[in-house]
Length: 63
Picture 1: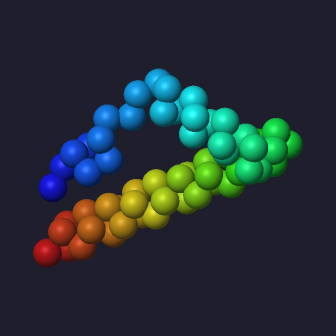
Picture 2: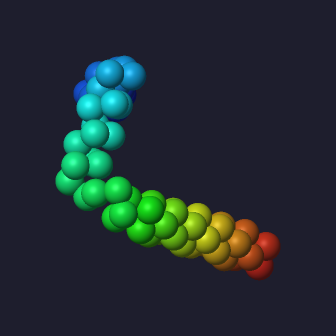
């Protein structure tokens, strides 16, 4: 099932509300730390996917 059907289309008003709630929950000083952690997590995920692709390609080459 399409994810956009389940979640609906998020418009600019909903994004502003979400950003305000996040700002209220975490505060202005904590948000950069959260974004750094999120960026590091995404970087690690991409690295792991790339490593798995390399291993898969190497195993195909051996066969």
